Image (cartoon, rainbow, N blue to C red):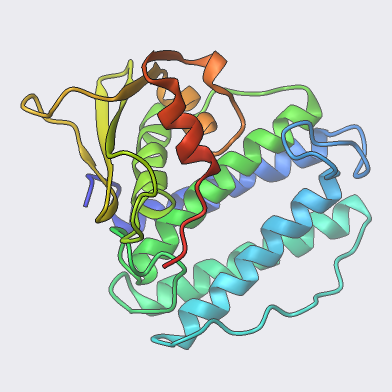
Length: 253
């Protein structure tokens, strides 16, 4: 498991980054303004998506160990700005309350349970930090005022994405490959792709040469793996096709 933030810090970040998210939403031209990084979504859609997600994960954490998640409730979401922000604040507090009550080690259903990140409240808290972080970028983009991400949070965001979205025992369907990600702030990661699946780890000095590598700021790397930036936004070395294959891959476990 990669180095990451402690549980109290994750809960604090969910609260802090959600405040930044609400500010970005309030600064948008309207709730019907388009979100350039989320095609066909408006700002209202973005808030509804994130708030509904906070409520769903609150229910998942509260339920504890389970074979399947609880059904998503079709909540009535207000469209007027002040009421919408109040609804999101309530959604966020429901998640934080569930996480505080559970503690970091409570197991629960997660869609990444077969990968590196643990299927517990700690893993959920970490994932929700970065869900809010990236959707805050989306909201700021819609408002025309993107602010830099905290570097340490963006660094953990790259690692978290690899631990969840790029971590699976499903066999890689192409020639075995390795990818190196280099953040110019001084962190690097290795992703191994072969018949055993996809497995991330911190990059060590004795690691094998990469089939392909991507270099950028931690924020650029995070936005790339989340699909907000493209290969052209990073320094790419080696076989670019490996990145294209990874982006297109939808493993079935």
